[in-house]
Image (tube, rainbow, N blue to C red; front, top):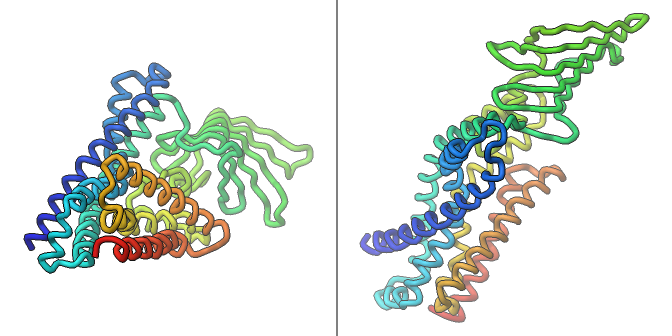
Length: 357
């Protein structure tokens, strides 16, 4: 028990120091980036500060795994350099036991952390992005080819999507029972309020009449222009969704016979974050135990950053490739973890056999 507490204190101290430093760097670069938009629209200095502060929870979530990695390299690496682990081994405590204790502690810390994060980050991130986009009059979601939806017998293209359920540049192509194009509606803008879409400047072209007729409406109401749930699923960023939100999105898409694989990937990304965090720490173990335990602090930081970047790139690319080629989202998300587990175990075994025993 004393050993567990001692290791936990040393590890948590390194974790907190690393987290504070990384978040400070993140805030500095975010602030520098946001200053480019100063006084654009209603985006003044006070609002920039508010946006940065509200984005801190998301920064904490982003930097946490890297803080675990670098914190372990610094705190546990210092213990290894001071021969503390050798002393523990002399007392009959094996390296295997020390590693298991550290990994289990990290796993429980990560689980607790991500449970808290799941309820905090989406709320603050959504408000921060909505405030920023509204102030800058900026789209909350953009696709150069427009965003397409299918609604019963209609195909809908949206050019611009903004915060607060506002869309602009809408084209609605409706087909009859023979799959022939029957009507085309052009709508300048629409806003979803009180369960209905308030349409502005509507042009309706009826292709079934001879000659073709055109009608103009300054304003109109629609209950089924676009399914608001689909719009939110399409435009919400992963970090603005709680795990329960993603589960509801998956069920909704599946019940409407729509592709839910992207939402499934987001779901498993969130579920496996504690495992990914432990994996980051596991990859640091060869540099804490074995021949490389004596390397200096600056080299440990460089090694930690390198491992983190490589892991981030591979764990980002492989799941997306899996989506393209049709691999199950769970397998796509787990594959990088499995690959790095095998790689980390091999390197650690080699280090232990050639260094500290």
